[in-house]
Each structure stands twice: as structure tokens, then as C-alpha cells.
Image 1 (cartoon, helix red, strand yellow):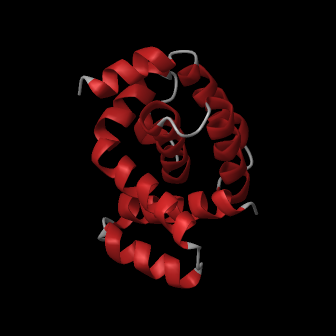
Image 2 (cartoon, helix red, strand yellow):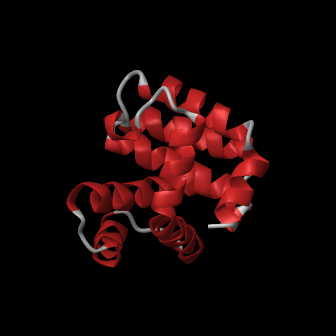
Length: 143
């Protein structure tokens, strides 16, 4: 697994556990970091994702629901939901990751952590979101 993919995987594990069990993100992050040591740079990258996504979950979910209405958010698997939140945050908020890279990384995480149909599903939803990147960036900035 590529180094930044490992950092994304750690971030995903933290976001998933917060989503499912509502455990404190800082505690989960520390535990996951002990299990999967990362360089300082990668650790910082994972932290940026986690603490970038968490406060924006309501708006990220609203955007996913708006641009992918055929998939009710409460019916999307928690792991898939968090993968999409991360990718959306990366290309619409942090701007450090090109859209295609964010989508490809999300698909890779879906292959590793999601169901058999998750990679195709996530690719489709994120592809629809990517078509509205500027509108999404405006919506997030105005929230």
C-alpha cells in the first residue's frame, strides 16, 4: 500500500469508529497510530483528513445527498459513507489532492474495506460529485 494510502486508511478507520461508536476521535487516532506507525508527515496528513472531515460531516452529507439522490445516505454503508466524505473533503476543501487522485484513492479504500460492489458505487457517486466541484466548493465556503 502506498504511504499516503496508508495514512488515508488510518483516517478512514478513525472516522468509521467515530461514526459507528461515537468514540473520541483523538483517542482512536492515537490507538490506530500505535497499531499502524506512520512518519510524522503521513501522521499529519491523516490528522488533517480526520479533523478536517469531522466538523464538516453535516455539510458533506448534505452535498452527497443532493448530488446523489438515488442513494439515501442512511442506507449507504458506514464505511462507504466515510470514504466518500474523505474524498469529497480532499478535493473540495483541502485542495491538495486532484479530483482524479481523490477518487482513485477512494476506490482503492473501497476495494480494501468495502463490499464487492463498493468500488463501483463510490466511483459513480464521486464522479457525479466531481462534475459539480465548483458548486460544492461554494456550498462548503458559504456554510
